[in-house]
Length: 420
Image (cartoon, rainbow, N blue to C red; front, side):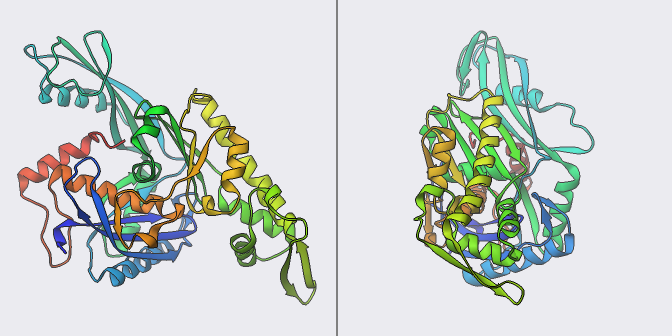
């Protein structure tokens, strides 16, 4: 195992914090393969809707998850690629225009256009997270993916800028730092998941990635190969659990257990003769309920969430334009009946996205939609390794390269070549 090729991903969700340590293998810059060495999970107590609400609790969750992953992998890491999401995320499209020096467009011309597009005034309470080139226009020819080598006088780029709240970002970095690690980079969670579960064909045809977390449901729409829209719906798996608490008169812990063991998101899949034993209390005694009642509660809330997602897709102008349909990821997507309910709600093809492509090693440990983000973060790190030549920091191992590599790494960080 080469310590210089290690990457660590950290997904701090509202219910669980997950860490993964992987080794980058293979030499394919577009889709580097990772070999999973260790996975760690811890219950999250300090997050609300993707934002740090309690630094001490969040720090404890991070430390436990990463240490568990380190123990499994038999290595220690210093830096992590951490995911960030939530309603503070905003996106906008920006344009950059430059005159071409000479006739043939060179890489330097493209870099200049990118710099102009990303030089937007960002409010003080926000920071630029990702700058993603969408397409280029040479003179009047639109829709060009890579203009290098073309002949033209005027080069224009359309860029997708993703910004986040400075305060949520600082608190997340501080939590990671307090746990004893460095944040190599913050990465938008739906984009990390997309990197891991979406195919190039799906992104080309038009697809919506719906990431169902505990606190929020995040949406990323891709069309003609590029990210086109990001959205957050402030409902997730925790709302389903709360409905079960109120509907059945059980504790939060029991509601979570019932949801995981007997939950079904699509009522018609449940047989009418099935019943569930509820936890007994002194006041209520022994109780049995039809499993249909539990399914009904879950069905109603999940249907509402999918309806809000549908509206977001329509408002973004992509209703009826997503030929590749919907891909569901996140912890709530693993529940029985979710795909059937989603197909009903969206009226299009639906599949559950699990990280299987370009993943080796302990791949069985992450073969579930709840691991899409954290595996995507590790794969993002693998892309970074290929692009910049900067090495993952490992205690007692090699450090990132010399100043020249660091300068190149910074330039790469300014915009994401062809990631999304």
